[in-house]
Structures are given as C-alpha cells and as structure tokens.
Image (cartoon, rainbow, N blue to C red; front, side, top):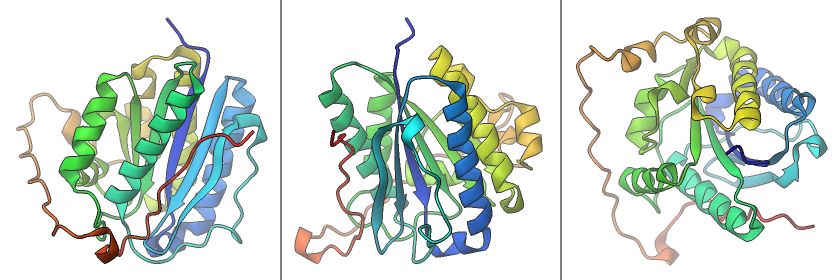
Length: 253
C-alpha cells in the first residue's frame, strides 16, 4: 500500500572539486526542489552538505513547500571527500528521525558527489554496505548521482551497494539536467511509492551524457569483482580527525 509521506534525505557534495560546477549545482538543486514543490506530493525534506571541514544540515525534516533556494553565497565548495563517514551518518540520522515520527513513511536517500572517497576515518566501506543492506531490506530506497565519474563503480567502492538502475553518471556541464531527471524520478516515487519509478531510463541517461552505467545494467556482461572492504586503522575518538559531525534530522517544531 502506498504510504502518505515520503522522507527524503539529500547528501550534497560541497568539496573543493565542486567549485567548477558550483553555479550549475546550485541551479540544478534549486530546480530539483521546485519540481517537487510543484508536484504537490507529501514530502518531508532534509539537505546535508559535506566536506572534510564541515557538515552542514541546511534543511531538517522540513515540508518540501518550505524549502528555500540555495545560493552561491551559502554553498562554498572546499576541502576533501569523506563520503563514507557522511553517508553512514546521514543514514543513521534519517533512521533516528523516521523512528521518532511514528508514521512509517517511504524513505529515499540521495547521494551526490563528483569525487571518490578519500578521507573517512570513522567507518569503512564494509560498514556502509552492511547498513545499506539492512535499510534496503526494510524498504528504503537510494539514489547515487556521480558528476564526471562512473557512479556505479564509485558507489560500490565506497560501500554504497544499491540497484544499478538507481545510479546516474552525468557530465559535469550537464549538472542541471541531472538534477532535473532526478527530480522527475523522485516525484514519481513520492506519488507511487514504487522502487522502479526511481530507475533512470536510457533516455534520461542520454540527456545527461551517462556513458558508464549501461555496462553495469547489461545482464550478459561479466560480473565485476567486488571491492575489498577497506580496513582503516582503529583510532580512539580523541585521535580521529573526521569533520563529519553527527547529524540530527529531527524536526524542531
């Protein structure tokens, strides 16, 4: 049965390499939100941007129609990419917020990045893969947007092991188009509650210049070898240098 509310948590890369597509990312994200606002579905929305200097919860479990646009003054890409740590923490924060709501919404986590994991210290890709497997079994959905890279490979190597159809690799100069296609799929999911509505079609992939994902969707292709779980040196909390702060996505109202 279709649930009434969709809880969307969006993890947005704010690392240094995003600087060259800053304007398109801001514009694309704002168009993404506007599409959901016009769609009229019951969506509760959180946005967290991340890099190795800070983690910024910009919107916290807010009704979609209250979300304000990002600006180039407030979105300031810099530093490195703790993708694993940030991903684990946004999933855990979403889990906590959803449990406290008590209404059992559909859940969608959207990951967006233009770079591969390079500085996480608290969690490994095996930790993240285990967490995503657990949440997928509970009915959660995940999307992965990769700018200028093989999204499937980058996600897999970070431990983000999700349906191949839920990845999109987009050309950097087509950032706005990638956000637009993702908005359409998110809106369809919010209306239908169906996982398949999140699959990027071949036409959508063509519009964003995705030359990578099709090979991962081909059932006749030789399976790729799974990545080896990353084993990071065990550190005490006082020794950790991660700037991925714990995230709280509980509504304050």
